[in-house]
Image 1 (cartoon, rainbow, N blue to C red):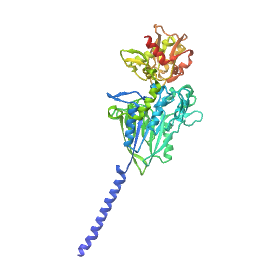
Image 2: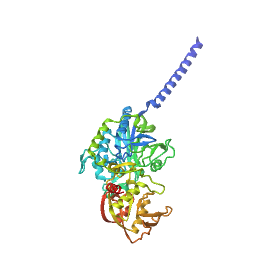
Image 3: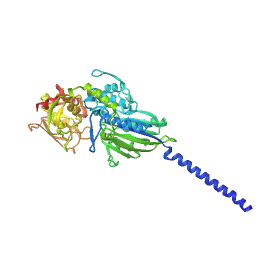
Image 4: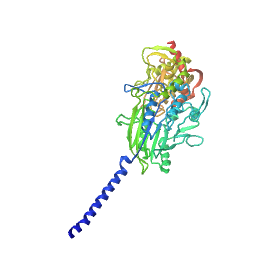
Length: 516
């Protein structure tokens, strides 16, 4: 019995130690298991460009259209109640008639219908100037459309700077609380936007270095105790479907962006991206509503930091869902307001005229547009920028709606007088943005050598008769009013003398096609 008494206390102690060890291990696992993380979903759209009533093809399947995009987003938000809907810019601009002819108000109304939680402006939000963008966001009157109530979405951008105040034009960041977790969102837009701004906008705003602006806002958020940080970046990115071969500007910036940033929603180059660079998840969902991003976050409630993140890019395939009725009613309303004017037939073409550039930087559609502008004002030659053309001219019957879809910007043809020397200066600016940005030419040919220093790359200029251009001789040039104001970095056009204001770019193309 004495021996048993000695063994019992020892056994009791061992059992107690074992029990407390198991309890401690169980508590540690529970506190750090996935079940304890707080889940939040983010749904992202980029580069919609007012494609309310246009359908696309993605991997052979029909996708896009506002009513289908809305149906998907509503479905996924309902299935994921702890979620936010965000966009990374260029939701308007370069839009088809159902949006562009209503000053983009129809698209803004569509975004209001979906209740986007946060947005950031892309370069195309500034197409009509800062005053018009402010009207669309805050509400106000326009002589063409009357009063518009504005947007219900807060816009953020850290690097759009008001030149007068030296402060951001928009709030640089915003903090949202979802499922009890605080998440910071920062907005940014590519500095390439500086080259696209209207002259009046260039006097008011400047797009500053993206990395500096983002990191400054990260510091401000960290000071407020925010550990989960997302960036809405209208900056290019792309990757293969498996995340490999990631490239473009945002990919290169990622290592220099503060490591507290967890996710970056990209935009601008209309590509697929779903990749991770130095623990930063970068996503982009093509463009035109073909798809959307679904980012799943798991946040550690003890630190407020994102512990895990995963994304998928979800195509808006028509076969898998019924169109959203509320959006369909909105489209019907604006279609009725358009009336029958846009259904007027212009002509018929036997094969598609493509905007796709060949290996020399030319496209058959850009050539057609340049020819139409040259003819409309009787110029010696014409130049057209490829960014002004937003769709192919599909074979078959061509209507006014098709022409407005191809050329959605409200530009006018103008005739300028430039010397041969000034024309050469214009063509040298095809590399002004740090990359090749060739103009489509009509009535003129030129050769160049990209290996030569910037400003010395144009070797030979000839008119349509094969004569070399003379430096001091004056020539009549047809361009869009956008290029005439120095758009796309072609500031040398501003040195030209205005000779004539011609028709709108759509009207010029219509007349040319009717005559051919």
